Length: 99
Image (tube, helix red, strand yellow):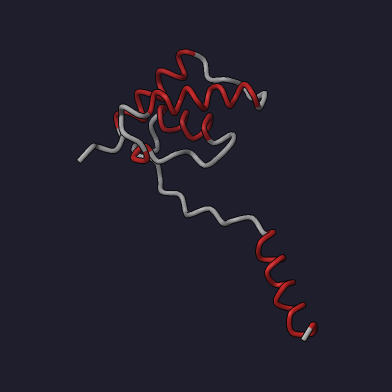
């Protein structure tokens, strides 16, 4: 019985310990714009740049502020006020529209 259970248990442990594969990233809207490049660079220092359609324009300010706080906690370079404005404008411009 152990000779049957051990391989299954081992397979589960090996699978469970492997990092989840991130879903494929979609290109950012207007990917060549300075605003999209800033989002890719600054947001991408910790995670894949977010799809602007992930949140509504009303939600993005609190999301960006939460990320700024997280940047401080992680000792990353925080977004300047000007960078925050640019990132927010970009994300809100391309945000999910409420249906």
